[in-house]
Image (cartoon, rainbow, N blue to C red; front, side):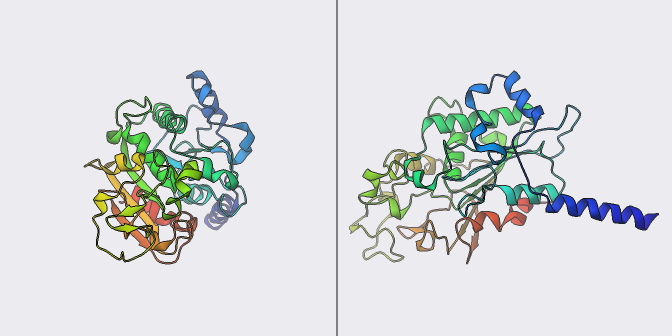
Length: 317
């Protein structure tokens, strides 16, 4: 009898692990959002199908045991994988967390972009509409799960959007919510901009803009147009660089976004490039954070291949 029960357990577990994570939100969460006046934010955008959102209880009697995790994706990505190389979403992380006992009632994500077309990446910015929508989603998850704190795991542009929605005080977001964030993990973010956004790019692509984009500044002291160099021709003070006003504001706070903050990056990142350096500084390093540096991961792999580390930082005991 013991052997038979063990076999059934193994078979059930294998089926779960091999099954693909699918959205959208559960019916229970969708109905709750409707009944609590969140329809206008269109979190469950139907055009993204079962890859566009994830999370929610299966019924009223499901208990939320773990501190909920909200996942914020990057530019042109989405909540879950869509089969494209730059569209892996949070499928790997959510799958791993569920093998560790988390349920859909504790894991949440939605696709914040208007589309997942990589060709439109240059048009996306840290605009007020996106920030407000993400902040409202955080509010909704906390209200729905009846928890006083959540965890956030973010990637790429999701890092700088996540930091902005936490800090608040712009875009009618209201006050900061640092006290409501237990752990904030920022993976491969462009916290000090991207060298690819210097020069003419800052005037061509909104995502590289000087106000709400990833503009890294065109000079550092007497060094002009040498953002990508690992060693600058002339020593310069990083604090003197005039880069994106949105990013500058985020980096000027003298306290962290959460109880614990972590920055991940890879020296082989194929999107940020230059060993993650912008004017000789690691652009993915959030102020006041602990760091995890990887040698050989691509931009997407730094998210998808570190799920065990993400889990261990959320659950340190």
